[in-house]
View 1 (cartoon, rainbow, N blue to C red):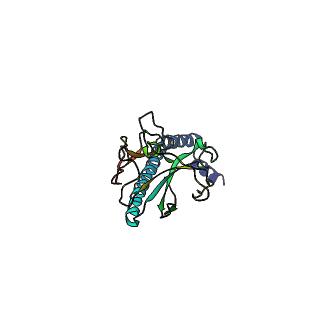
View 2 (tube, rainbow, N blue to C red):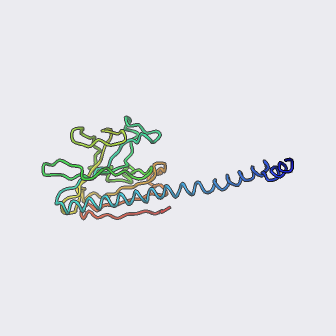
View 3 (cartoon, rainbow, N blue to C red):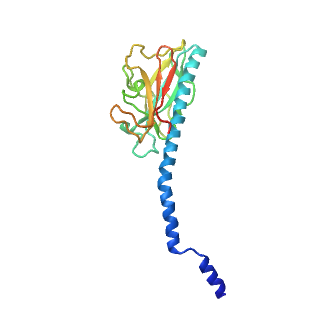
Length: 223
């Protein structure tokens, strides 16, 4: 019995050895966690940029094929699961989702597809410097009319605002073709802040031609 106990004791790790292993793990984690976080955040922007591009392209195709105006609404609201945001406090709302509507003969906009939300913590920058489709000349945020506008999920209800524009049956848009600044949207992670007119290091901008309805993208960083 004594010999077995001695053997087990010698096979165990000493406190010093355990501390060394923990220290090595901590050092590895210090370098790998930021890298993994950056990959996840970059992936969210990639996914969101694809969603945005696809949505605009689909809306234009629907306008052409249906021979009717297709309205694209860009929603601003609070996510109850995000710290610092409150459904009842408009100053905490972010632009983070969009939805297509078909404008029927009576002029009423009827939902054509479900609401699409950007991935992760990605938001649309609301300033005119980065998103003229949100804040450009002639663009005004509207509040929903409970009797005709959809109620948003996740406890948001009618506590939201939206900015909209339309793709017309000929493929063009309702956006002014003479607006000198052009029409575009910029997305980035909510935690990344723009410094004046300088965007965050990782962002995506989609530019829309108001006459042809075609779009082109710009993303300087894919990380």
